[in-house]
Image 1 (cartoon, rainbow, N blue to C red):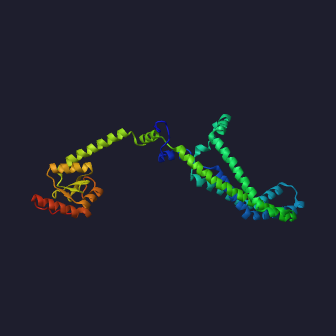
Image 2 (image 1 turned 90 degrees about the vertical axis):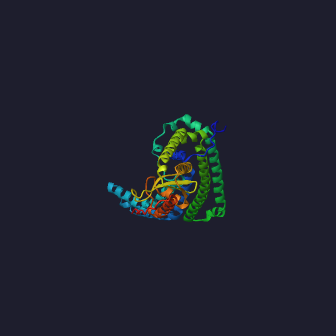
Image 3 (image 1 turned 60 degrees about the horizontal axis):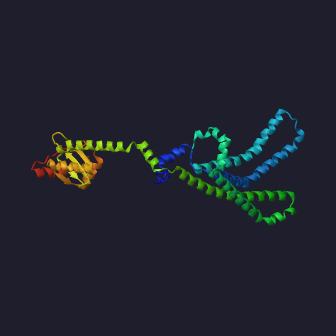
Length: 361
C-alpha cells in the first residue's frame, strides 16, 4: 500500500546515483568550504604574515626614501608597479595560492572529482523574484534560516569566550606602547578568528552530514520506479523469461541430438553431466559432445539411460571438464589420462578391445 501511494521506500540504485552525479546532484555544504578557507587563512597569516609585513615595510621605506627623486614619468609608474608586484605580490602569492588550494580540497573532499558543464550555464529561472520568494518561505528555507541563526549564536558565544579568556591582556592594553598594542590587537584578532573558524568548521561538518542524509532521502525510489528502471536497463522481464525458455529449449534439443552419439557420461554425480565421445580412427583425442548442470544434467543422464550409454561418477573430472572444455572441443592434456581411464573401463564393460589412442599435442 505504501508503494502504491508513491512512498519512496527503496534505496536508490547505483544507476540512479550515477544519473544524479552526472547532473551535479551531490551532497555539498558551502559552509564547509568557507570554514576550511577561514581556518587555513588564519593559520597562513599567523605563519606567513610576518614575512608579508616585513616586505611591505621594506617597500614603504624604499619608496618614502626616494620620494624626492620621483619625476612622475611613465617609466617611473612602470617601475613602481614592477617593484610593488615583485615585493608585496610575491610575498602574498603563497597565501593566496594555499587558500585557493584549501577551497579546492574541501570541494574534492565532499564531491570527489566532478565536472558538470551544464552547471556553468546561467539559469534564468533562478532570477525570478517569485521563485526566490518560494525558496524563502519553503521548509528548506526556514531550516536554513534557523541553522543560520544557530550559527550566529554559536559564533558569538565562541568569540566572547575567546576574548574573555584573554581579558587580562585587554585590560592592561592601555599601558602598552603603540607597536606593542598593534601586535597585541593583531594577535587577539587572529586568535579569536581561529576559534571562530574552528567552531564554524565543526558546524559545517554537521551540515555536510545533514546534506548527505538529505541527498540519500531525495534519491530514494518507489517500488514501481525500481521495476521501471530494471525494465529499461534489462528489458521486459516477460520477454527475458521467454528468451531464456527458448535458449533452454534449444540447449535441450542439441543435447537430444548429441548425447546418443556419446561413449560415456561423466557425472558429479547429480549436479553436472558431460557427454564424451572418442573414435580412435577419426579423433586424435576424446571430445566433449555435450555438457550441462542442473535440469540439463538430468536430461543428459536420462538420454544416456535410454540409449544404454554408461554413466560414470568422477567428481573432479566432471568439474574440470565442465569449467574448462567447450562443447565440441577435445579434452585438455591434464585431463587426458583420467578420460582415458574412464574410456578403458567402459570398453571393458562392453567387452570391446581397449583402443590405444595417440594423445594430441
